[in-house]
Image: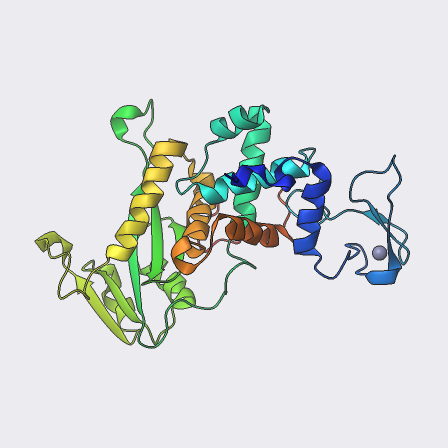
Length: 315
Ligand SMILES: [Zn+2]
């Protein structure tokens, strides 16, 4: 039996660095300060040197592969980053901060930031194709759900539920947005920017879609209130409903409470796993490698931003 968790890069710091370098520097070390490569870069292999330390002879600065990626300036060992990424990638409903804390025997704050940095690496930018969803002869389902616990379980003032809009290609990708409300005015710019106009749009019968629907090649509206969930195998929003069921089971069953300020990070995590799922031929290791690629060029500091509601600038 060869457990995935036996892989060397989860246990040895040297192997962890080699693993990350092989994926981020396929042609050898690249200086993050000036972009120098090959013979302009040397490795410092002395016993007193940090693992993975390189020196740039062009700009004379030292560096490792950790610089310029979401793990930069953290004291968490590289092998633990790789363990965390693997856990997030192999758990369909996510991993809670408490679970990370117990598994890694670290502080709550460290566990929280580990989780959010992995989520940051999972944000779509740089991982899957950024182009619009759908296209000619393709169906894109658009649906909304509301996230927030039952009023009876919450103390004090009850915050309103947060709305999430998901645009889902049948047999393809998903893109989710935390939206301030579900109105035609709010949804229109998001849908115009993210769905190819040649697509066939499938929604529920909500009037917010009446006018937007005319922008697409076709628009089918399912009448949920009349219990008409599936009509002729084509008019349905089950792909979006199935996606929401995993998102909700994850958020309620694993994360319990997600603050509105961080909701977009959780939806990015669930979008990522959906867009890189086994049905598309992507296994747990391949998915984890994609997170590493996504970690490049992103940094998340402790002074993170508050809310990100779709339509507002990211940070
Ligand atoms: Zn340099």
